[in-house]
Image (spheres, rainbow, N blue to C red):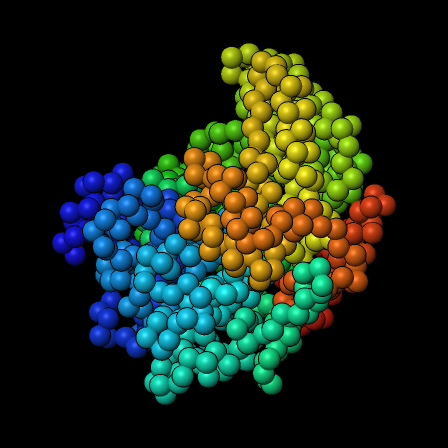
Length: 614
């Protein structure tokens, strides 16, 4: 592609678009029946850090009849050159235009990437709306956590894959290949595909609304289309496909290390946490599987760090033994092991010392709220004593930096809860001083995000704080956290406001997204590009009020825009959890206590699976 070779020297980080990475798969287009573009709606560095990309790349390219290539959202400097030179969006492996593929598969990890999806379609020459595409256009599919409320993106996506995709992707591609061989008309294929478990074809559903604009029902328009689409899960997670020769990025990325998933799901039951609800049940890999996969990844990548990933890795039953075995096998080669943020109620200093045997970094904990009352409301399950004992032990053992994550705007929050954040941060700082950490080295970082009510959680009925109130709370904390050794970080409240709008949105937001794209909204997850005024203008142009979505309080009987998507966790259970939250009552973890009755296991005919010993 001569034009691309001319452009690359003119942009920052040309490696984002060059391809040719270690372990990349290159297939001849003429040798396969089906060609899939995996489209990540963010920049290369973010997309290449997504483990799901590596998994699907392995699954699809392992098949002899299909290929998968990658495409990422071009950074604005690259997009400018592409438009100037009339260069369509292209894949990294073959540099083919995305519009030439049979399937374009997006992952929707974050609501504020929606305009990037639209921009990538536009750059590919693919009509934005599903209804405007003909048989010559690629099939546009999407999955990921945002697919559990697919309605804001319903006009732009042909098919949504709901839930875990390791098995569903092959079934869906088989269906596409057979439809292609039979020259099946597009609408007939969508009808056929909608009958696959876990597939939602939004064009086959009609939305009914009340006089105030609220959704009253989303229902099928044709016989045989399911009234509710139930998520897919991988029942035998230990045997799930996993890449042993993953792609190694050609430039630095966000997570530049081996990512090894050791468990899926979480039963802690934090009431704000969508991932904890969507990824149930808990399924752990056997230690032998983890060790075998780790050895293969070390050999095939050259990385010097293994990150054991999950929603709650310290809950992995044999975590201590597995970490010790990994380090015994690989530490002499300079390969370390890391864990994501740790829970203070099951933290072990000995485990942390073991993890950081090769190299030591800061420790990160997420108390989430500043008082025990509010931690009980959100069912966090940790105490102040847990946090203080853990951080004191860490400082005594030589750690100098602690990061604490909190959330503001949680249901029932008062200024006393904000004062609790300040008090806890200062107490942790004081513990560092008592442990004689040098003053110029001691650092306690307080990072605060804003609560966003999410679908399929106990707080899905709750409104978000107003934008003015979120900003007030940020200012309240900023004034009180000014002290040597304390660092205060917070997320843009306007960005969290927009996230809440689309997390709770319906199909009317399609016009907002189109206007936002026209106004230049993209890469909104990046602070240098997010522009709240542009978004507010897009809402004005659409005749909609964003606060109606973010600040709306639902009653238990109210229809919700996502009711036709079944996560497996029952509405009855979520309502009961909401009631318990408002009463300050906690709910036990089903790993260690009685079954709380979320309904997932009987509904999906599934059950938790815990690993044995080494």
